[in-house]
Amino acid sequence: MVHGPNLNFLGKRDPTVYGQKTLAEIDAALQDRAGELGCELATFQSNNEGALIDFIQQNASAMDGLIVNPGALTHYGLSLHDALADLAIPIIEVHISNIYAREPWRAKSVIAPAATGQISGLGWQGYIIALQAMVEMIAPPAA
Image (cartoon, rainbow, N blue to C red; front, side):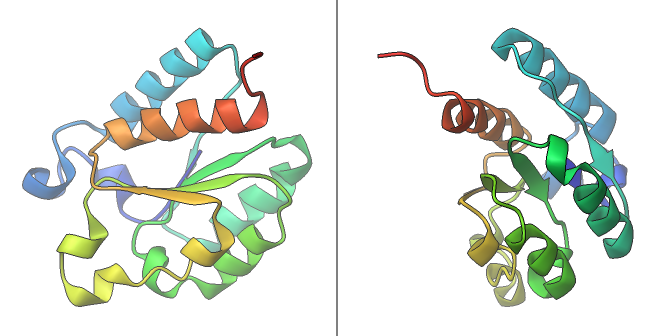
């Protein structure tokens, strides 16, 4: 789970758009759900695009899938896009708010073409949904 710029301010940053939960609370909920699903989850946040790319590249060989909320990098993070495009694993892009119902510039994601799918506008629960979907993509339930 990779969190981009400003997500460290969740809970403080415009709660009418981003909700009341802090990033630590979201990460804790993700870890709880990962335990229930029987998977391992690493989380990382940075306000620096290079640090996000370094984390992804340094951990790529150990990843079976990646969930990413690129924050504002959604709209201009071309080097993050390139790092994601180099991965041969499922990628789910997550946004707490509905990026298509906000300012017009937010509706363009340069990350989406590198992602397997996208979840937008479901609040912090979108992370949990992404994790559940990722686990099923990686290890589908037996028929």
